[in-house]
Image 1: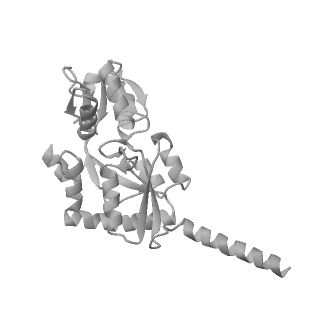
Image 2: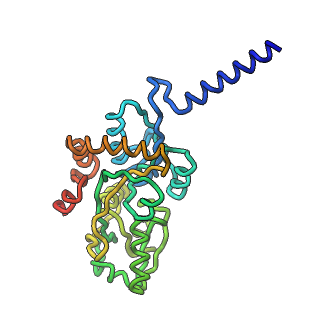
Image 3: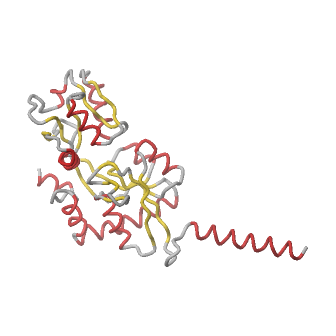
Length: 276
């Protein structure tokens, strides 16, 4: 009986060690922060040739972690259609994946109170095409749009409000696939950011053109980190907010933006508008 009790005690002790270690990194005892990212939207987030998450979103999180030595980070590329479900299921602790502010997101999740990027949308089409300068010019045309993306919701609302005859061709949000649809003539246009589309077009060897989308309701949008609406999520959000403010004040965030985004400072709305 004593041997059996001793064995059980050892089992429970080991289980406790395993449970404790599950929330920590082995080296230094720093808490592991798991970051979900799509990994398919360069230069914001992608998977490089070494199979590692890379891009602006990733660089910002790494800079934040550099200011918070109590944390270590692991990036988890996840398909867009499952990324929110994975966050809610506890598979990771936050999402860093070019997520624009939306009212419904703020109601359901904790967003970083400090945006780490601002961006506006452009109408993108194949080079040489004329006659597309605004949303009104999309009448009778096909527009590729990522399912559930902020700009897609705005386009849906525009169609509903105006009765415009615009056919939305829903995509998985992968800009490379969208540009291929443009190149093949299966869609007439898409809505995206200049940085993303130009970089991807250069990589694919496609020639594109674009015009800023200045229609009412399409002003610059803020980009945020997203956390689960739990006590742990709020605590992590607050810690990340503090580090983001430091990066902003020191100018480091601006440096990261210029490094990854064609030399542009897109870290504030004022900087974005001045560049435009």
